[in-house]
Image 1: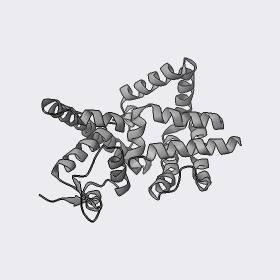
Image 2: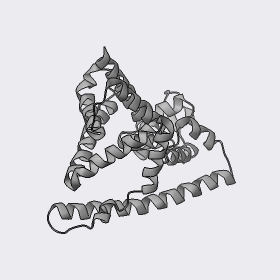
Image 3: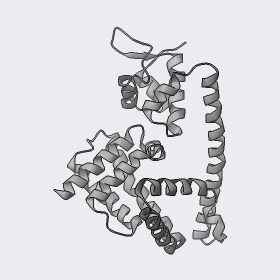
Image 4: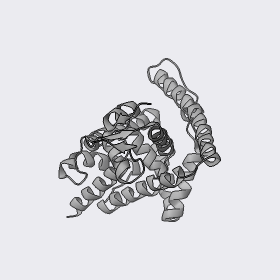
Length: 258
Protein backbone atom coordinates (compact mmCIF):
# COMPACT_ATOMS: atom_id res chain seq x y z
CA UNK A 1 0.00 0.00 0.00
CA UNK A 2 1.19 3.53 -0.77
CA UNK A 3 2.59 5.91 1.80
CA UNK A 4 1.93 9.61 1.29
CA UNK A 5 3.99 12.65 2.17
CA UNK A 6 2.27 15.64 3.75
CA UNK A 7 2.02 17.40 0.38
CA UNK A 8 0.65 14.29 -1.31
CA UNK A 9 -1.92 13.74 1.43
CA UNK A 10 -2.93 17.40 1.25
CA UNK A 11 -3.58 17.05 -2.49
CA UNK A 12 -5.44 13.78 -1.99
CA UNK A 13 -7.68 14.96 0.87
CA UNK A 14 -8.06 18.67 0.20
CA UNK A 15 -6.76 19.44 3.69
CA UNK A 16 -4.01 22.06 3.75
CA UNK A 17 -0.42 21.18 4.61
CA UNK A 18 -0.58 23.67 7.48
CA UNK A 19 -3.63 21.90 8.92
CA UNK A 20 -1.95 18.49 8.67
CA UNK A 21 1.10 19.88 10.48
CA UNK A 22 -1.23 21.26 13.17
CA UNK A 23 -2.97 17.89 13.58
CA UNK A 24 0.46 16.30 14.03
CA UNK A 25 1.52 18.89 16.62
CA UNK A 26 -1.57 18.35 18.78
CA UNK A 27 -1.40 14.56 18.42
CA UNK A 28 -4.64 14.24 16.49
CA UNK A 29 -3.09 12.74 13.34
CA UNK A 30 0.48 11.53 13.67
CA UNK A 31 2.35 10.20 10.59
CA UNK A 32 2.99 6.49 10.27
CA UNK A 33 6.71 7.21 10.32
CA UNK A 34 9.26 9.91 9.60
CA UNK A 35 11.81 9.05 6.91
CA UNK A 36 15.56 9.67 6.95
CA UNK A 37 14.81 12.70 4.80
CA UNK A 38 12.68 13.95 7.76
CA UNK A 39 9.54 13.78 5.64
CA UNK A 40 6.34 12.66 7.35
CA UNK A 41 4.70 9.62 5.73
CA UNK A 42 1.08 8.55 6.13
CA UNK A 43 -0.27 5.06 5.48
CA UNK A 44 -3.73 3.54 5.11
CA UNK A 45 -4.54 3.72 8.82
CA UNK A 46 -3.73 7.43 8.91
CA UNK A 47 -5.85 8.03 5.80
CA UNK A 48 -8.84 6.38 7.51
CA UNK A 49 -8.20 8.38 10.67
CA UNK A 50 -8.12 11.60 8.65
CA UNK A 51 -11.45 10.63 7.10
CA UNK A 52 -12.89 10.21 10.60
CA UNK A 53 -11.50 13.61 11.61
CA UNK A 54 -13.12 15.28 8.61
CA UNK A 55 -16.46 13.62 9.36
CA UNK A 56 -16.32 15.00 12.90
CA UNK A 57 -15.32 18.46 11.69
CA UNK A 58 -18.30 18.51 9.33
CA UNK A 59 -20.47 17.89 12.38
CA UNK A 60 -18.85 20.78 14.24
CA UNK A 61 -17.09 18.64 16.87
CA UNK A 62 -14.21 20.55 18.57
CA UNK A 63 -10.72 19.20 17.91
CA UNK A 64 -10.11 18.24 21.54
CA UNK A 65 -13.31 16.16 21.55
CA UNK A 66 -12.42 14.46 18.25
CA UNK A 67 -9.32 12.93 19.84
CA UNK A 68 -11.45 11.25 22.51
CA UNK A 69 -13.99 9.97 19.99
CA UNK A 70 -11.31 8.50 17.77
CA UNK A 71 -10.04 6.44 20.70
CA UNK A 72 -13.21 4.35 20.45
CA UNK A 73 -12.76 1.06 18.65
CA UNK A 74 -14.86 -1.78 17.28
CA UNK A 75 -18.67 -1.51 17.39
CA UNK A 76 -18.55 1.98 18.93
CA UNK A 77 -16.61 3.32 15.97
CA UNK A 78 -19.03 1.66 13.55
CA UNK A 79 -21.94 3.21 15.45
CA UNK A 80 -20.37 6.65 15.11
CA UNK A 81 -19.95 6.15 11.36
CA UNK A 82 -23.60 5.15 11.11
CA UNK A 83 -24.57 8.36 12.90
CA UNK A 84 -22.42 10.29 10.42
CA UNK A 85 -24.23 8.61 7.56
CA UNK A 86 -27.67 9.44 8.92
CA UNK A 87 -26.67 13.08 9.49
CA UNK A 88 -25.18 13.38 6.00
CA UNK A 89 -28.31 11.88 4.41
CA UNK A 90 -30.39 14.54 6.16
CA UNK A 91 -27.95 17.22 5.03
CA UNK A 92 -28.14 16.04 1.40
CA UNK A 93 -31.92 16.34 1.46
CA UNK A 94 -31.74 19.79 3.03
CA UNK A 95 -29.15 20.88 0.47
CA UNK A 96 -31.39 19.65 -2.33
CA UNK A 97 -34.24 21.76 -0.97
CA UNK A 98 -32.01 24.80 -0.58
CA UNK A 99 -30.74 24.47 -4.16
CA UNK A 100 -34.32 24.34 -5.37
CA UNK A 101 -35.14 27.45 -3.31
CA UNK A 102 -32.14 29.30 -4.77
CA UNK A 103 -33.09 28.34 -8.33
CA UNK A 104 -36.70 29.48 -7.87
CA UNK A 105 -35.61 32.74 -6.24
CA UNK A 106 -33.28 33.47 -9.17
CA UNK A 107 -36.14 32.73 -11.57
CA UNK A 108 -38.40 35.19 -9.72
CA UNK A 109 -35.76 37.93 -9.61
CA UNK A 110 -35.32 37.46 -13.37
CA UNK A 111 -39.08 37.84 -13.84
CA UNK A 112 -39.59 34.25 -14.98
CA UNK A 113 -41.90 33.13 -12.15
CA UNK A 114 -43.36 34.10 -8.79
CA UNK A 115 -42.77 32.15 -5.58
CA UNK A 116 -45.31 31.60 -2.86
CA UNK A 117 -44.18 33.38 0.31
CA UNK A 118 -43.72 30.08 2.18
CA UNK A 119 -41.45 28.77 -0.58
CA UNK A 120 -38.93 31.51 0.21
CA UNK A 121 -37.84 29.60 3.29
CA UNK A 122 -38.07 26.00 2.08
CA UNK A 123 -35.01 24.06 3.20
CA UNK A 124 -34.18 26.36 6.09
CA UNK A 125 -34.51 24.58 9.40
CA UNK A 126 -36.91 26.30 11.82
CA UNK A 127 -35.71 23.90 14.51
CA UNK A 128 -32.13 25.07 14.04
CA UNK A 129 -33.13 28.74 14.12
CA UNK A 130 -35.14 28.12 17.28
CA UNK A 131 -32.20 26.26 18.83
CA UNK A 132 -29.87 29.21 18.20
CA UNK A 133 -32.38 31.67 19.62
CA UNK A 134 -32.96 29.62 22.78
CA UNK A 135 -29.21 29.19 23.22
CA UNK A 136 -28.64 32.96 22.94
CA UNK A 137 -31.43 33.76 25.41
CA UNK A 138 -30.15 31.14 27.86
CA UNK A 139 -26.62 32.54 27.60
CA UNK A 140 -27.34 36.27 27.57
CA UNK A 141 -30.67 36.64 29.34
CA UNK A 142 -34.23 37.68 28.52
CA UNK A 143 -33.26 40.94 26.81
CA UNK A 144 -31.72 38.89 24.01
CA UNK A 145 -35.17 37.58 23.00
CA UNK A 146 -36.39 41.09 22.24
CA UNK A 147 -33.20 41.90 20.33
CA UNK A 148 -33.68 38.78 18.23
CA UNK A 149 -37.29 39.69 17.47
CA UNK A 150 -36.31 43.27 16.57
CA UNK A 151 -33.57 42.02 14.26
CA UNK A 152 -35.91 39.54 12.55
CA UNK A 153 -38.54 42.25 12.06
CA UNK A 154 -35.95 44.54 10.48
CA UNK A 155 -34.75 41.82 8.10
CA UNK A 156 -38.32 40.96 7.11
CA UNK A 157 -38.99 44.61 6.35
CA UNK A 158 -36.22 44.60 3.76
CA UNK A 159 -38.19 42.41 1.37
CA UNK A 160 -36.79 39.54 -0.66
CA UNK A 161 -34.31 41.55 -2.69
CA UNK A 162 -33.15 43.60 0.27
CA UNK A 163 -32.62 40.53 2.42
CA UNK A 164 -30.72 38.77 -0.37
CA UNK A 165 -28.50 41.82 -0.82
CA UNK A 166 -27.82 42.05 2.93
CA UNK A 167 -26.83 38.38 3.14
CA UNK A 168 -24.70 38.69 -0.01
CA UNK A 169 -22.82 41.57 1.59
CA UNK A 170 -22.01 39.37 4.57
CA UNK A 171 -20.64 36.68 2.27
CA UNK A 172 -18.61 39.26 0.36
CA UNK A 173 -17.21 40.73 3.58
CA UNK A 174 -15.97 37.30 4.64
CA UNK A 175 -14.12 36.43 1.43
CA UNK A 176 -11.06 38.71 1.84
CA UNK A 177 -10.77 37.72 5.49
CA UNK A 178 -10.69 34.05 4.50
CA UNK A 179 -8.01 34.84 1.90
CA UNK A 180 -5.94 36.67 4.51
CA UNK A 181 -6.13 33.61 6.78
CA UNK A 182 -5.18 31.25 3.96
CA UNK A 183 -2.27 33.51 3.00
CA UNK A 184 -0.81 33.23 6.48
CA UNK A 185 -1.44 36.83 7.57
CA UNK A 186 -1.34 37.20 11.36
CA UNK A 187 -4.82 37.74 12.80
CA UNK A 188 -3.43 40.62 14.90
CA UNK A 189 -1.89 42.44 11.93
CA UNK A 190 -3.39 45.97 11.60
CA UNK A 191 -3.31 45.42 7.83
CA UNK A 192 -6.53 43.45 8.38
CA UNK A 193 -8.34 46.56 9.65
CA UNK A 194 -10.02 47.57 6.35
CA UNK A 195 -11.33 44.01 5.94
CA UNK A 196 -12.56 43.85 9.52
CA UNK A 197 -14.12 47.32 9.23
CA UNK A 198 -16.33 46.01 6.42
CA UNK A 199 -17.34 42.97 8.48
CA UNK A 200 -17.91 45.19 11.53
CA UNK A 201 -20.16 47.52 9.52
CA UNK A 202 -22.14 44.57 8.19
CA UNK A 203 -22.74 43.28 11.72
CA UNK A 204 -24.10 46.71 12.72
CA UNK A 205 -26.43 46.57 9.70
CA UNK A 206 -27.67 43.13 10.66
CA UNK A 207 -28.28 44.26 14.24
CA UNK A 208 -29.84 47.52 13.04
CA UNK A 209 -27.92 49.37 15.75
CA UNK A 210 -24.37 50.41 16.58
CA UNK A 211 -21.84 47.68 17.31
CA UNK A 212 -19.38 49.11 19.89
CA UNK A 213 -15.89 47.55 20.12
CA UNK A 214 -16.82 45.59 23.25
CA UNK A 215 -19.87 44.15 21.52
CA UNK A 216 -17.79 43.15 18.49
CA UNK A 217 -15.29 41.37 20.75
CA UNK A 218 -18.24 39.74 22.53
CA UNK A 219 -19.53 38.49 19.21
CA UNK A 220 -16.18 36.77 18.71
CA UNK A 221 -16.70 34.94 22.01
CA UNK A 222 -20.19 33.94 20.87
CA UNK A 223 -18.72 32.47 17.68
CA UNK A 224 -16.30 30.42 19.77
CA UNK A 225 -18.98 29.23 22.18
CA UNK A 226 -21.27 27.39 19.75
CA UNK A 227 -19.82 24.46 17.71
CA UNK A 228 -22.01 25.20 14.68
CA UNK A 229 -20.14 28.45 14.10
CA UNK A 230 -16.88 26.52 13.72
CA UNK A 231 -18.47 24.37 11.04
CA UNK A 232 -19.86 27.43 9.24
CA UNK A 233 -16.58 29.33 9.26
CA UNK A 234 -14.20 26.48 8.55
CA UNK A 235 -16.12 24.83 5.73
CA UNK A 236 -15.43 28.05 3.80
CA UNK A 237 -11.75 28.61 4.59
CA UNK A 238 -10.34 25.53 6.30
CA UNK A 239 -9.53 24.35 9.81
CA UNK A 240 -8.37 27.10 12.11
CA UNK A 241 -10.27 29.93 10.41
CA UNK A 242 -12.68 30.46 13.30
CA UNK A 243 -9.81 30.85 15.78
CA UNK A 244 -8.03 33.21 13.38
CA UNK A 245 -11.17 35.26 12.75
CA UNK A 246 -12.11 35.66 16.40
CA UNK A 247 -8.55 36.64 17.33
CA UNK A 248 -8.60 39.21 14.51
CA UNK A 249 -11.96 40.59 15.67
CA UNK A 250 -10.76 41.02 19.23
CA UNK A 251 -7.50 42.66 18.11
CA UNK A 252 -9.45 45.04 15.88
CA UNK A 253 -11.88 45.89 18.70
CA UNK A 254 -8.94 46.59 21.02
CA UNK A 255 -7.44 48.99 18.45
CA UNK A 256 -10.78 50.80 18.11
CA UNK A 257 -10.89 51.33 21.86
CA UNK A 258 -7.26 52.50 22.10
